[in-house]
Length: 259
Image (cartoon, rainbow, N blue to C red; front, side, top):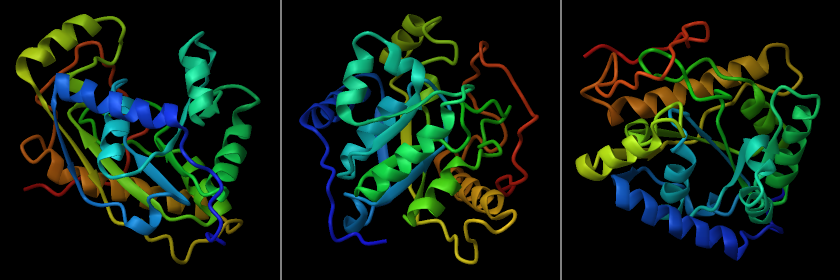
């Protein structure tokens, strides 16, 4: 891919939102960001692939990316874009609408590929939903992130996060005020780690099974990056959200090594 001409620049409204996100996270928790995004990739083209554990994740990742000098365009559910005020802000900030469960969902991948080709950083959640694994380890991923990487030839950096589930519950807005009040008192630690680019060598678009293999490598990389963020919680999380359902139907084959 020719990366000599970067055409997309994060608008001021998005930069401002990143600063606001850092303030919000700092008010509710202690944010620890580790790992680096190589300077040559901070303005794209780049795909960030993150685990999804809480409705608070977008705010946390927005703040963490600001700490690393990255302003990603986020692939987000279409419901946010339909909201009266938030939707307009999402569109102005350059984020990418994903209408899950509709015939238009395929357009999101094309839009994301065009965004990366224009020199953007795009943030995706390969699991396609807030994960429901009982141990809160990454689930088996959807192939969209891998197909995006194949389509634009951009590197994929895994992003692992832990702790946001202690601030905003799964069923928010139900229980939201209680979760925020608890966070203000307890000040949980939220950790975010940017890993090394995922090795996708030997895989190519159009090869049978390549998208599935690439997806597994991406989820494996996120899992490996998550292990050191939760050293005292190798099996199940200490914080249990009673409103969070459990679903083992999409459990990923990889598990962290037992200590």
